[in-house]
Image 1 (spheres, helix red, strand yellow):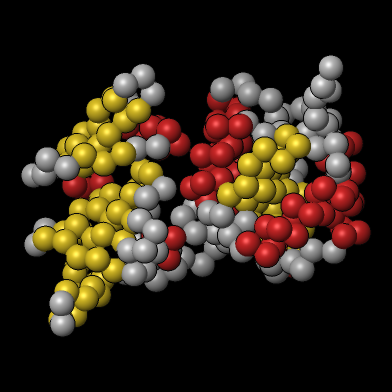
Image 2: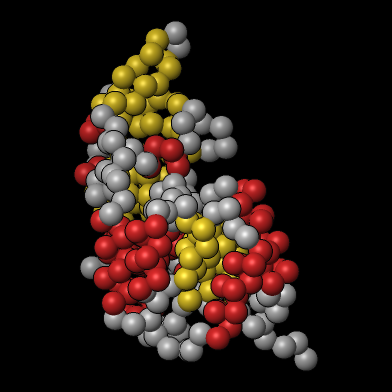
Length: 260
């Protein structure tokens, strides 16, 4: 009979070498744990948590899309509201000492880059010894405090796109959605569409998250262009756009944006 793992773990880190190092150190320091998923950005980390419900999450703080702090805030809020088992969060960070002191006051652990094997082993011991209780009430406040302390990146106002031999300037406010594939990002706007080589994860850092929503790993939509959402099959959803017959996929992690 197969025994249950000591813990089910998610690693979220946007740099592949660092992600590999975390994976190797986890296998060495905690071989009884099961790595159930890895993610290279905040949106994928959130989707992976919803899909696998791991006990332990290693979160890089600075990731494309949602930051590690954003993902942690969602996890803490969702776990509390749905009465799920408590989640133990470890931040992987290059933050300054002030933020580290804030972590020390809270119910989370942290690993400073570059990560030393001895420090990782200490974190594993802390995780193994952690009582199976819900995070204390001030964890949400701690996360909010740290989120406010992050410097907001400058917002994009124009997107440059090559159209034949011309460089086209597209006003961000006029963009309806971005859709990416393995090579290009499609920019659909009021005057037509264009292709750019900038990946979504880089664009997200310069877009206002209150206006541009990542509804799928390959789609970022301007909320002002959305007419509604429609269920597809038993567990799917698609967006309906104003003045367009095009329909956009919605991942499970973004369903909450369109619930009553």
